[in-house]
Length: 291
Length: 190
Image 1: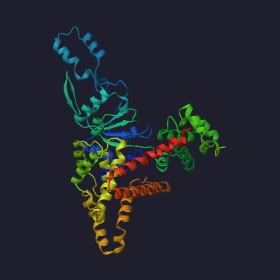
Image 2: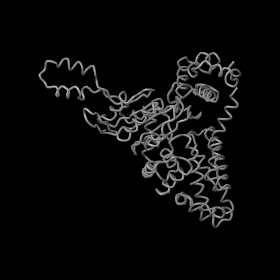
Image 3: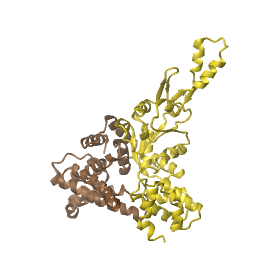
Image 4: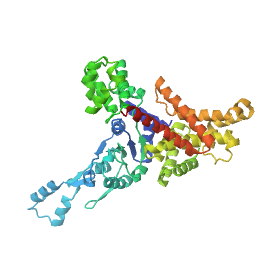
């Protein structure tokens, strides 16, 4: 294994993120080749966490762009601070400056509201980590716009000119696959898939993130969660839910999971009435053993 | 393995339905230059992250890498009689450089290894495939996964050898991946 990859792996582990060679290799390549990293996988398996942990590990700023339906270029890139411009004109009414000068002032950087993409490009000092979260929720138009920004890392503002990134940000995109992304975007990114972790890995994650938990309790928690994932649920619990549940159990001073504790805390990992019914109808985890 | 093989792998992927772009081939060669080329897992993970763009590409990539390149290299170098008509293996040089040379020397002198060369090729290439699925913790569960994937790898390698076609191995791999889903649907469907 390359030394740098090993280094990234241990940096991530220092930030209490249980990882493997695949994530470390993908991050190493993404940083070395300057290509964005597209991370796909089911909800709650730690996709967003990769970017957060990377920013912490590199000791740099995390700039997050949360995508949603209807997100457009202005909200993602920049806007003019319109009320401030108006006020400035009002205050400046009596001054003898010419029309052109006034215009130059109100369209200067002081009146520019930098949104995440522009922030990432103009960030001084160190290359920031740019997290474009849940890109599958945005519209196709926005995806096309993003392609342009991600390939050149420069933005042209008509009133100011072209701004080019001084430090190329490390870009991480995440997607839950609620919509199929265009091939154009996919092919420009490195690809990484995160699945639900195996029992051993999930156990390691629980121990790393909830250190107060006992060995037997953590094993019970992960086993039940792993079994729950095989059920026919509308919302399958992710690692985030496992950690929530483990934290709740520790807070309740539970030493083992009996039926009473399970009933009290079931909301930690099942967020749907119908799913709870499915879970309770399942004899192997609910009815038999936990009387 | 050298840069040339990376380019050929990209072309092979395109032939099997993964829309690899020229820019990705360039990126793959660049990636290959900055990684530890002797670490098979790292080569596999790096090329996979560059060449694939969705989870559906994974089985195709795995087949082309393990049954096409790794197992193909074994076939080309040690099990020539039935496989002479097959196209040149991309990984030949690479595998030879790492463990092939000694084995080839042995195999030519020792009857035992000579007789068992095909099963050995199947087992060794599948072990590489199985070890790639190692979960990183020394427990029964993770070794069980390694064991089962090795067996699956052996089945796929035999399919590749008997049919002489990678397409069959890819289909079986995809079928196997989806069979788990289908079983889950049948048993949890009620």
